[in-house]
Length: 286
Image (cartoon, rainbow, N blue to C red; front, side, top):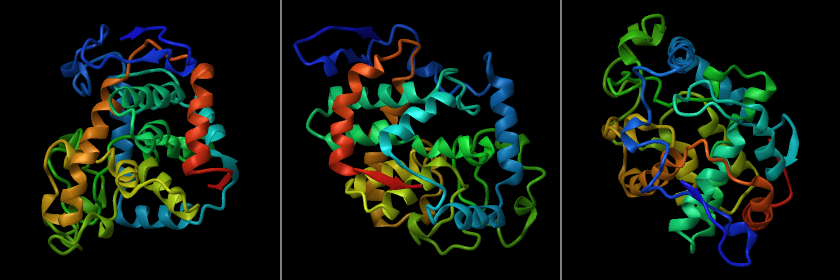
């Protein structure tokens, strides 16, 4: 990663170099076996995998999908993440707002013609704002997975965190398809509740004009068992298969731009405010 000064446009002052990240190699990301943060990470997933049941998820949809908690603009929501450190993330221990701009700038470097994609990079984690409104982090952060069917082996800490989840022992839920039909489509699958689904619901509720590919990135970027391990394909339809490459393209920026070299947020904000004004303007309902 390097900080460079190019041209008169101050919004180009920060450019993450994904190929020559000086602080971390790609294989060192998502280490769930060791590291200084591993105890915190494991404890978060243990709570998640204990309490994220089908009933729990249905209740969270009822609690949050009406977007009746507050009203604010998107940039204010992003900057509120200054107060949040993601307790499920083994890679970083700094506020989530910096990660938002790191991801967006990584995308802008490789996709300068897709401003909606850059905006998705900026806002993808904004749903974590739920944690600032007293939602426990196990219902906000971390990898997501379907509920109502078998918990697959690729889920993080699968072997030693689900033993107290009643759905894991329910014969109606612990088959490959569970309550779903084969190839029903991810639109019809209930995921563990978290920031992905919440922000997707906020975008739809406020009629934001981000393309369908961007909404898929928002909704499923934490669904690592699917997009990175190939699990749950038996639930996918043609639309999901068509969208998978977009989610994977987003994932490399979400993951590999994480570094302790932090962007100058004040310099970048005017450019990204212009994208907010284009795709999700004004005061939004949350």
